Image (cartoon, rainbow, N blue to C red; front, side, top):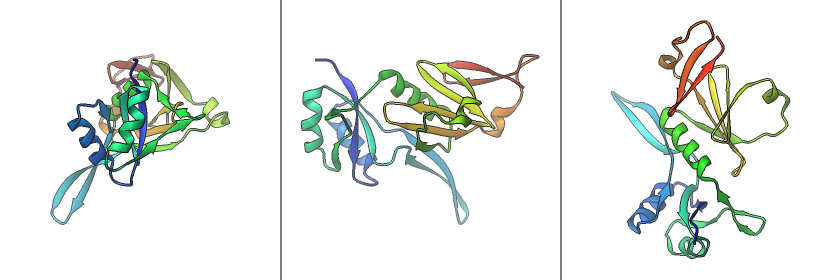
Amino acid sequence: MQKNWYAVYTKPHCERKVSLSLSKRNIENFCPLNFRKSRQLFRNLTLAEPIFDSYVFVRSTDSEIVNLTKQINGAISLLYWKGKPATINEEEINAIRDFALNHAQIKVERFRQNSKSEETDLSYLMDGQILLVKNRTMKLNIPSLGLTMVAKLEEENLQPQGGLLGNKRSFGNKELLLPS
């Protein structure tokens, strides 16, 4: 049996609890976290919040995943597409991991297709995913979920490192050359 990635829909604010219970059962899962800085009184805190509200990604077979969601406390159901559990490509999971590791303060938006504003944006093809870069923001489209991850480039990453052709920006193990 081939293992695929699936999105498990959870109760609100139970993403980490479901992820921990899956890890205790030795089931491969992924709950991307967004690290946000917060200041309370005289302390600076770093809070970890899930990027995708009420979703945990699980790698399992078709037959196991349906029974698994019934056994895990806090899991409601699977994300379905055309009557079958929706599968997510391995490349998309890797792109989400790279994007979450290299960027902070990530927001998730609905994926808009055939938008005229996106046709004029500067886009790059990376591992089958389109990465959009415009106005110091980076966008990663996830077509299987119909979502877009958006992150602003940090000020320290905006220092020009290129030459006459443009500025270099790194994304995971890839380097992009942006026009200056």
